[in-house]
Image 1 (cartoon, rainbow, N blue to C red):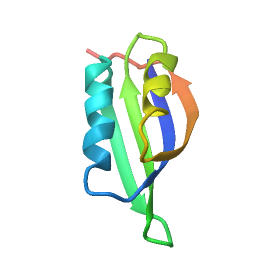
Image 2 (image 1 turned 45 degrees about the vertical axis):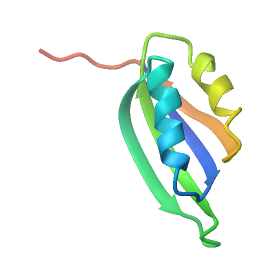
Image 3 (image 1 turned 90 degrees about the horizontal axis):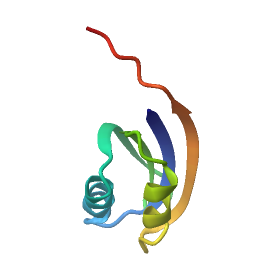
Image 4 (image 1 turned 90 degrees about the vertical axis):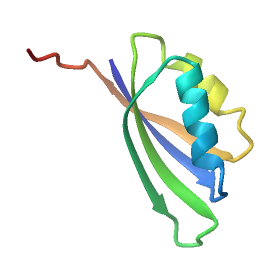
Length: 84
């Protein structure tokens, strides 16, 4: 199952690294990542797409604990389509 997370984070040198470390450590596969700076240049808009059969709350509860994360919302979940 694919999950899309919209994240607003402080624009620090290590924020993306921490975000990806938590994602990998919790066993979620990265399916997409989009970063755009906000108009104030102090924050980033991050769209993170992950794939896993695990419940998404296992990841979001850990991401909320990161001090660089200002806002996190689950934008959607969809079943992954497998093709041969």
